[in-house]
Image 1 (cartoon, rainbow, N blue to C red):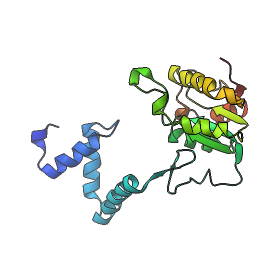
Image 2: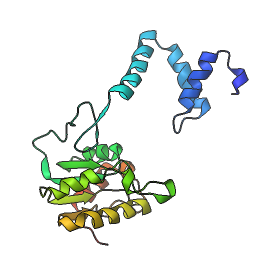
Image 3: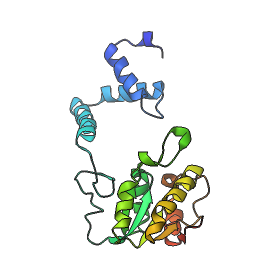
Image 4: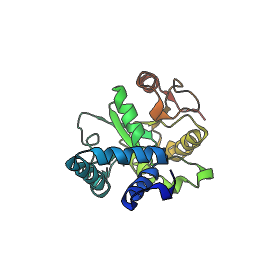
Length: 204
């Protein structure tokens, strides 16, 4: 559908906004917008308000950098979690993936990405300093490097091992039930759960 075929500028603007989302083409964007037009006005208002509140009110946990409604997320504030173990992940989706296995009861640290020179992402762009501060405190017994089994993930693992190894925590990685090249968030729960339970000491 070309710009000239839109009967309304409001419709065109809405389609353009939806089409700006990753993975949403213009035809899909048009179908989504038309679906909203067919809905009750109160439903659409709730939809719009939820997006606005998401952007304006969402917080990032001051301890682990996970998305949260409060300054400290539910996981970090849970007194039943093992606070001596930290699972290092790339993003919030990976926290959700690991939690869905129901095999892990420690804490998390969200890096906010992985080292990728081709994308211009270096260590300074990630939440590494706060991770080092936790390990430096001496209260952490194990660091689980639960990053995707990609070249960028392995590069980040190596950097963190060199950065944190001087504090002598046990540094482990997921068992290779996660296939090389796999993104963690797309790994099935059973495979990921086994990879967590059968984790190995990190080897250079």
